[in-house]
Amino acid sequence: MMKLAILGASGHGKVVADTAECCGWQSIEFFDDAWPGLQNNSIWSVVGDTAALMRRLADFDGVVVAIGINCIRLAKLLELRAVGARLITLIHPAATVSRYADIGEGTVIFAGAVVNAEAHLGMGAILNTGCSIDHDCVLGDAVHISPGARLAGGVLVGDLSWIGIGASVRQQLRIGQRVMVGAGSAVVSNIPNDETVAGVPAKRMR
Image (cartoon, rainbow, N blue to C red):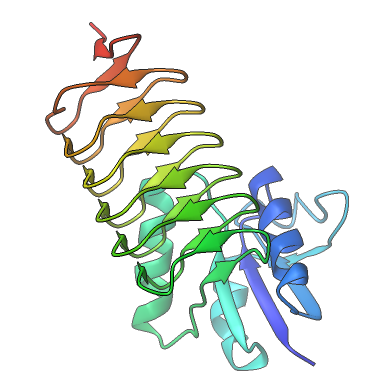
């Protein structure tokens, strides 16, 4: 029986667990640092916190971090990797991922997402429901592409950036690290590090 540990028991964690079941994982246990106050997420039980997971790593065939906040997700992934956790990548069977794409460890790709040839995804990316990453895009570590967002070919997205739901990014653009792109935005020019942009076209939020 394939046994999976998921760190993070929020709504995002539920979707990760559902994806894992679709990928053939037969036993799932949740861990969350809100435990013991949080003991279930309405579907699955929460059995401990990060420290408990660290003590039980040998019990699991794989571990995935299901925390939506990019900086926390990356920190937990690095912490787990440092102690030898078997970090896995989950790709929903209803996603379309080119065999020529490069997918980093700890990444989760949800149903309906598309990743085209020679796209490169860093560690711990989230490709949410129905988003698309076109050819030759490069995503850094712990990037989150929200549902329905679209990246045209050759886009570079820096570490820890978040592309909001339904946003679109023109081809060959450069989006810096720790950038937030608002929902429904149209990005038509490069964005430097640490900016929040929104609108059509996307502009800096003051």
